[in-house]
Image (cartoon, rainbow, N blue to C red; front, side):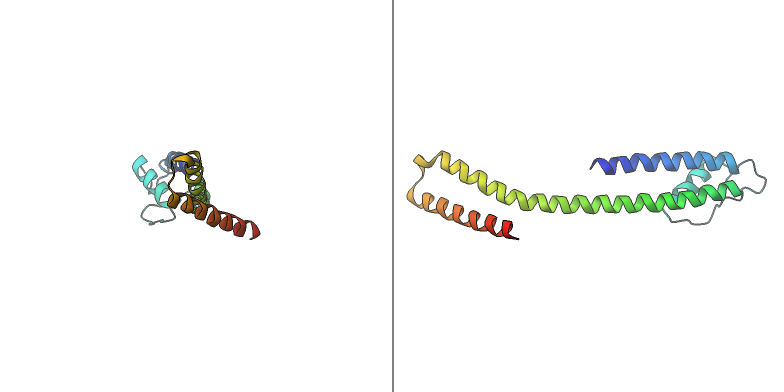
Length: 143
């Protein structure tokens, strides 16, 4: 989850710095389409998200170089975000799988600690749980 927060911070910094940078480079140019900070942030956000509407574009060479760099950074950020989110979902699914075995072990330990209070059918259930857990763990280890 930390990586998603870091990606958010990096994204804000990239959009902010590129927006300010493109404004400083483009606004003094006489043919500039990016003449105010709002246009600069709009362009930066559209470029980093790879939407690129084309309604405002840099006209200077330096502005276009920033645009090229921002396109690659945007693709990297989006790719990293999707990868991190996918890894998180897979790890949650694996954790859920491990949790079933761990909760079964916890329940067995709890019942063993109170074995003197168990009725006959509860002892039989405990034995059955132990057998099933043993088979499942043994099968998992053989894989």
